[in-house]
Each structure stands twice: as structure tokens, then as C-alpha cells.
Length: 393
Ligand code: ADP
Ligand code: MG
Image (cartoon, protein in one colour):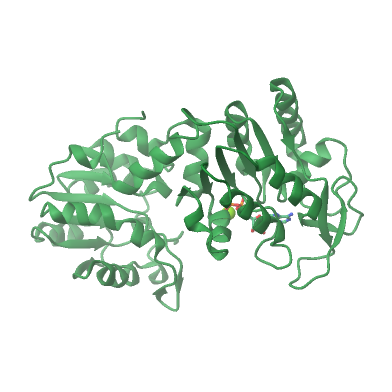
């Protein structure tokens, strides 16, 4: 993977794919984490007096929906950079965009309109990729969160221009690669969240590396049911029971512990302030849903994590958005954050949100900005966007 160190950007027009897929509220950016994450790359290019042409997607608009315009992002970026940002309100592949970009001088930052306004973007249309390629003399991919997408603004254009990984992209790939080789042991993985189906690939991959896996969240119930447990009305993926059995068998074959909850907090419905019952994880009464790991499981998980030198965590242990079902996630977050001299990584949109809400971000070695992209990298050891930049390592 070529990096910015190899790019002489002086006086060049550089097209940069960033990930500005930020939440908007009342027409304003509600969380600017992703915009801030792009600043090191932009500032590096400005130091070289390049013309910086930024492009991103925002949401999943159907056509040119004004609610998905990037104008609010341009405003926020101006504040963060303390310099004007030229917002180009036309479809990014259009001739009008091309004409505006042709007129930009060195040291200027421009933000193009939402790439998903282009119907060819998600189809990786080669003609659209050629239209993007007219906009720069070099291409920088810094949208780590989109690097698993075979889209025109990610891989299509990268194949047509001299292309480089931006600072964020490089940082993420280096941080996650440490979970696939050269890691210190014991190495433990904590997985949770909604669905086994989203994570089966990463479980299979990390089971080969880690010394133990702890499974919580809704996905634990598919494993518990696969082992013959009664899970009541908890979330289960019945079509994944076979896959869950395969993973359990593989863990036994490797002699690696795969810990499941022994008790869960159960309630009739997800309701704030509900008074849950602590029930055995494999005997959840009919009519109740398991919504968080129980106190005994919290303790067992914390004990199992003690002494770890490497930890990867993805997926909350329960419905952390609705107290009191946040207690299991809190317990795991504290257990991981409290490890001394360990390399700790948290990835996944909701897990990262949980860690931030608890104010524990600083206690982790790395907080990954890319949910789906981090998981796919840990599963496959590479991503389409990385391959388009020459591959890894
Ligand atoms: P991440 O974004 O960190 O990868 P996921 O998207 O896989 O995590 O899962 C997060 C979601 O899983 C949250 O919305 C949370 O409420 C839900 N969840 C966790 N445990 C349970 C459970 N026991 N029952 C229902 N939903 C759950
Ligand atoms: Mg999620």
C-alpha cells in the first residue's frame, strides 16, 4: 500500500476520498469525529501547497435528495481548518464540477457533492471513475470506513490515478494488522452485538489467532440455542444454528475457550427503567428476552480478560442504548480499559459509541472508525481499497 510519504504533492491537484458520512441534525453536523479524522491528511497536503479536492458519500440517498447534500459538512470543515472551503454543489462526475475544479489554485480546499448522487457510484461504473479521475493528478484514499466498498470513488478511480493511502487509512490498517500478526499473548476477543450473521467471518478468522473468545450480546443466543439451550423470546438466527455449531466445534478442536453467558438480564420488552430478571442463559423463560449479560457473566468475562496482552472488542454485550441493559457493556468496557500494558482495540459503530458514552476512549490503544471495514479487514487481512493501493503488507 503506497502512503503519503511517497507522494510529492507540491503544486499538484490531489483528489482525496474521505469518509464524511456524519450524522446530521437540523441541517447541522451532529458529530464531527469523522471530519476531524481527515484533518491530518488535508493538512499534510496543504503544507505541500497542493490543491485539495475532497469527495465523500453521505447516507444512502435515492438520487439527488437535498437532505443528503454535503454543504453542512463544508461549513464544519471550514471551522476546523480555519480556512475557506469551496463547496461544489454539482454531481461530482459532472462537467460543471470539472470546470470548477479546473479553476482552483494551490492551497485551496474544495468539497465535492455527495458521490452517491451519481447512479454509477455504487456500481463502480468505469465511465464515472474516468470522470472522477479528471479531477486530480493523484488520488488519496483516506475513507477507511468505506475501504471495503467496491465503489467508483474508492477503487474505480484508484486504478486510474497514482494512488496513495491517507493518514487515517494508514493508521487504521497498521493498528488492525497488529491483531492478525505479531500480537502479544494472551490474546482475547470479545464479540457481541445484534447478529451472528454480520460477524461469522471475523469469528472464524480470529478464532485461529486468539487464545480465547468471549461472546455476549444478542448473538450469544444463537450459540446458546445451538448447544440445546432454551432462550425464550431472545433474538436468535435460526438459519445460523449450523454455523454456530461449526464454530463451537472448531474452538473445541483448537482447545480454545469460547465463553458464552451463564446468566442474562431478561425482560418482556426493551423499555427504559424496566426491572429485569436474572435468569440462567440457557433457560430463559418463554415470554422473556435476554437483553444483557448477567452479573455472574460480567464477573466471569472480567476474570477471563485479566492478564490479556492483546484484546479486540466488537459489539455491545446488551441493549446498551436503554438502561439498565447497559451494565454488561459497561463492565466489559471497564475490564478492557483497565488492562495494564495491553494492546486494546475496539471496533464497530455501536461498540465505539458505547465506549465514547462511557468516556473511556482514551483508555483504548486504538478506537477504529470503520465498523464494517474493520471487521472485513480482520476477516480477510485486506480490503478492496487496500488492494487498489498496492495491497498489504
Ligand atoms: P457494532 O455496531 O458495534 O458492530 P452491532 O451493530 O452488531 O454492533 O450490534 C449493536 C446492537 O446490538 C445494538 O443496537 C444493541 O442494542 C443490540 N443488542 C445487543 N445485545 C442485544 C440483545 N441481547 N438483544 C437485542 N439486541 C441486542
Ligand atoms: Mg452496528
